[in-house]
Amino acid sequence: MADDIPPPEPSGPEPVGQASAVRPFLLTAGRVADTTGDRAMPVETQVVATAEGLDGLDRLAFERRDIVAVCRLPQSLAEIAARLRLHLNVVRVLAEDLRDEGRLTVHVPDSGVVHDASVLRRVIEGLRAIPDARGVLSDSD
Amino acid sequence: MTATETAAGATAGTSATARPPLPVKMVIAGGFGVGKTTAVGAISEIEPLTTEAAITEVAAGVDDLTHTPQKSTTTVAMDFGCITIDPTLKLYLFGTPGQERFGFMWDDLVEGAVGALVIVDTRRLDDCFAAVDYFEHKGIPFAVAVNAFDGRVEHTLDEVRWALDVSEGVPVVVFDARETGSVRDALLVVLELALARTEG
Image (cartoon, rainbow over all chains, first blue to last red; front, side):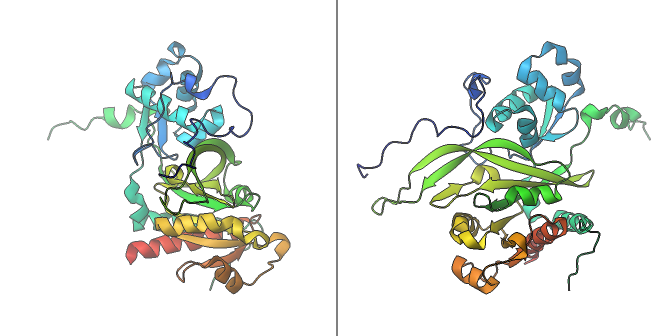
């Protein structure tokens, strides 16, 4: 082991943009999402509020309430984080909690979709249907 | 015949139990200011959103004796947008930063992506080396898209291909990050490549 390699810093550089007055992981009581394995929930994971979750909105406060409320319609973890201005990993932790309480359903995408030709074909067909901004069809050979 | 298939299962749902679409993810990578967010915004059905993601930063200087790169976790802004293909299928486009001098480990973000588009500014080619290396190493289908700022490209595609040293199978195209149709066609190049791999 070389001596000139400093130990990794406990925390990274300053986050981008304006920091919240509340340190992110205070919201999660210091817990972090498990990103050690390869099973951290992907950013596109879909989250939907349950009827029970929406009915119980009044019994939730702050971020937990906001997350359930914003998930009336299916949202990805990334959309939740962006819309509520929360750190992505905070959303991961809180969404798991809310799922365990029955307030949300969390749909982790099947990683096999990458190799699913039928899904890829549907995406390709869907994209092809998008017109040029100028209304000119793409001219492919 | 029993009447077990009542309406309960079918109609109990409100919007709260709506079946979410299957998300399909693509990554838009490239150096700072190369046009990632412009490209996402040109084709996304929503204004690009920004969130912060933690990534692992690997210092370029690798200790030759230990081959242990210095890693640290950093937080970067990540812009993204989406395209609803149909009610059951939604394409997400994530723009990820990647600067020169650093290799970024985007595993947290890239896991499960069907492919990637690496946007290149020919005036600053080396900004995209990290991304090209990353996707080649990970075996993720990707294409290099040269952003034609003001409709001009300062180098031929062959020169770009040579400079980036990408393998033959990697498409190199010119596009305009501001044009919906141009971004669409660049994404299609990546998707066709991904599809060809599933069939190959």
